[in-house]
Image (cartoon, rainbow, N blue to C red; front, side, top):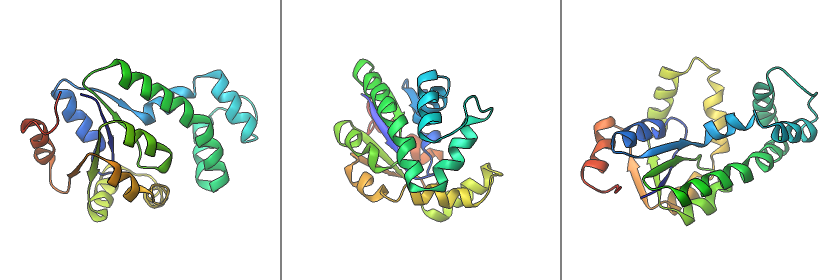
Length: 185
């Protein structure tokens, strides 16, 4: 069986996907798809054109990341470039595979996918997520808040998901969903 996996920043999506691999699931992270799209010349051209970026910038990802957080308009432009391609790739993968888990952020642009496919929401309290973020990242601490703000539609997404898993404890809690057969291959 295939599943979409979502949750707020540092809720445990990556850990959950790592566990899923042990239970014979293939996994895809939407962030990896986006990263690979920076190697696609037509995507790069669209980014440069619509965001008015000089051609052949050395660190295009960093520039786009900065612009993404700079304004809602920039975010909409960036999402309009990436999301249709990412959604098509995910849909194609889900349609041809079995035992696949795909990680997606809990944003409204992904809502239709969460309604169409089996989905799992990984929940963790804000305090636990901040602790995980600070433990794993030396980034600007405001990054957590920026991502959290962008994922403000999470309640709508959470309600659309078939299963909500609390991840305030440890990985044993996540494992139990596989062991008990709640998540099926």
